[in-house]
Amino acid sequence: MNFHTFKSIALHFIFSFFLLMSIGLTAKEEICEKNLKQRIVLGKSDSPIEIYIVSDWFCRSCKKLEPRLENLYDKFKNKAAFYFIDYPINRQSSNFSPYHLSFLIFEKKNYLKARQALICLTKENQKPTDSDVEKIAKCNKLNFQELAYEDISKGIDFFDSIVKKYQIDATPSVIVVNKNNKQFEIFKGGQAKEEAISEAIDVLEGKAKPKKKSWFKSIFGFST
Picture 1 (spheres, rainbow, N blue to C red):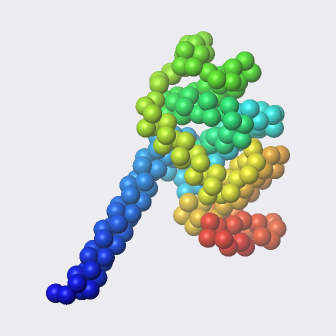
Picture 2: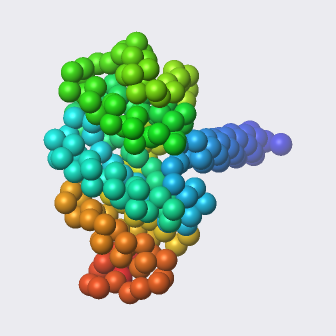
Picture 3: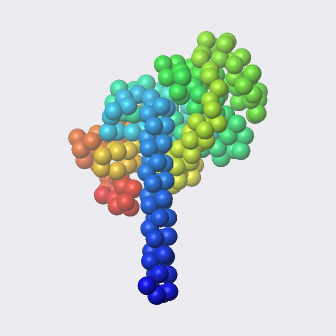
């Protein structure tokens, strides 16, 4: 075997090794994301329809529309899987994500109550501590458990992935997705009305036709 042949084989081996490592990491990341989604999902977890409610804890518009967003959950929780996503446009909102994740995991039945408790906390504290959250949890009879750093990191990564995947640039935003065919529709601010979300679900499930052209999109870039 001459030097050039040996060099070619060695380079091929190195390339193959890193390619397999990359595939392995991607598969592992997908498994981690899937497990995380199962832990924080609310509503009908096995539904093909997913609804992502994207908000910022210090966004005035989010707080103004919060009752409407909560009503959407009450209305459609038996028809869709719900994910409440943090998009910290205001830097201090990141301080609330660890506690938000904890309540998503450990207080599913009382999630909206826990959410309201966190919203109230934003009015008096921009950098809450575990003690602060334990106090409001006790007052509201909520189960707060401190999460491991790894779980918090995975949760924040998941939030970020949704914002990037659907190119969200404002809060509040509501994303209605059919996870089987990858089609979706995004509603921003006041567009997220019960009637519009209901229509979106029917169209994405194939039960109705969109009332207007170019109504929904897919993550592959097509629109209809």
